[in-house]
Image 1 (cartoon, rainbow, N blue to C red):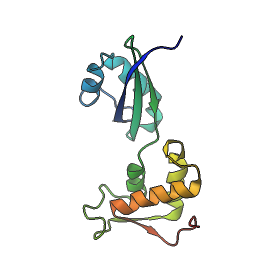
Image 2: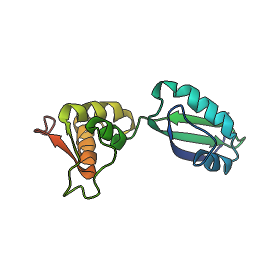
Image 3: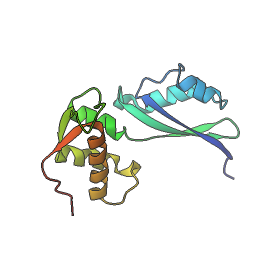
Image 4: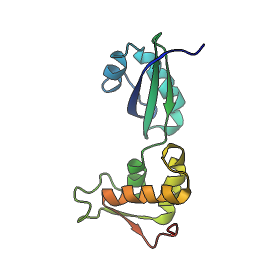
Length: 147
């Protein structure tokens, strides 16, 4: 018989750097989970992605056990790496802070495809390009994936 799920916890942690300090400790402690057990498992599974921000969805069961799924890094983080910037624009419609190519947008969209709410690569590229636009990042050239 399947375990009874009592809740979910969503966190964003740096790969290989989870520790019991906030925000992880209070979020897991309020659900009664073993914080150090999560940190050890998370760090072991994300050693190859050290330093990257990774969203994680933790499923909490009634017997205080848990499972967690690690998602791909958020699109804004990947866009900032591709554009080689540290922060997005405060006024994205006026101040542009960086540039990316459509090939870079396509690579990010292919990476994010399992976590996005779309079925085709063209729609995933469109979503990532919209994120870039809202961050003040210009996408160079004509969209090769437009209809």
